[in-house]
Length: 350
Image (cartoon, rainbow, N blue to C red; front, side, top):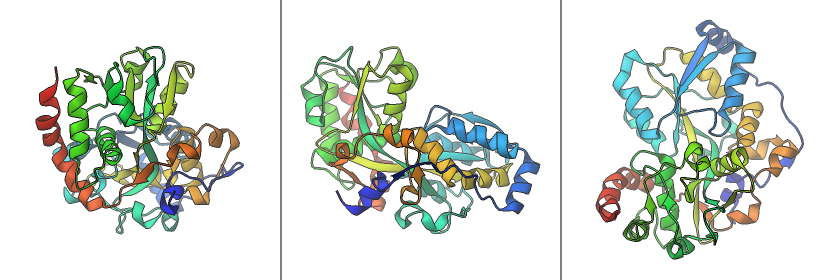
C-alpha cells in the first residue's frame, strides 16, 4: 500500500482521546455569533455524522442550523441559480466537484488555522475547497436477501440479486462507484469504458436497480447489494442492524476519494460558514467525522478515541483501493459520465 493511500485511510492514527475545543480566531467567532446561524446543503445528520458538528456549533457558538440534502451537482446549481438571493451558506461536495464549483464562480476562499496540516493534494491552493475526510467505495450486502456475499466486482456479475449504485448523473458517490469499477476492470480516470461495459452487462441481466442506496431504502430491504462509501455503509449497518448486513471493500479494486466543503460566494452568513469550516478541520470536528465512520483528512495529526478507531474497517480491507492519480482527467471524465451512462448503460435497462 503506497504512503499516500496509507495516509488517506488513516493507518497512522493512534489510540486515545483528543477532544479539545477548536481554536477559532476571536474576530471570526464574534462575527459568526452576530450572524447567528449557518445553513447548509448536502450535509445531513446521517452523513459522516454531521449531526454532532451542527450540535457543537449550536451549543458552543450559538449557531442555529438547517440542512437541505441534495447531490453535489445540485448544490453547485443551487448556488449559481440563487446568486445574491442565497438560501445556503455552505455545502459538501465530492472531490471532483470542488474544482467545478470554482469554475462556476460560486465559491469564496477561506483557509482554516489547521491549513498546513491538510495534504497539498487535498486542497485548493487559494482555499476555495479542501477535503475534510476520505472514503472508499464499498459494498453493503443485505445477507437476509443475498445467499452468497460478493467480495469483488467480478462476483457481482455472477449473482442473481439486484445491484444499486444510485444516480450516476448527479451524485458524487455514484460517479465514484463507476470509477472504482473502472479500476477493478482495467480502466482509469482517462477511460471509464470497462466500467460502463460492466454496468451495461448488469443492466442487460435486469439486475441494475434504480433504487437510491440511502438508509431508508436499505432498511426497508429495497437494496440487496449497494455500492456506497465505506463510511455510509458502516453507518447504515450499525444504525439498522449489524447482523443483517456485511460491509466490505471489493478485493479486485476500489477508489479512495473524499468530500470538500464549499462556502457559497453569496452566503448570507459568510462568517458562520467560515467558522463551520474551522470547526470541521479542528481536532473535535475531525473526530466527529470519524465517529461517522469517515477517515479524517488530518489523520496523521489526530489521536482517535479507542471506540472510534475500533469501528472502522481493518486496514487489510483496503489493499486494492487507490486514490485518483490524475485529478484533471477524472474531472473531465466525470463531466462526460452522465451522458455516457445514458448511452451505454441505461439504454440496456430491462
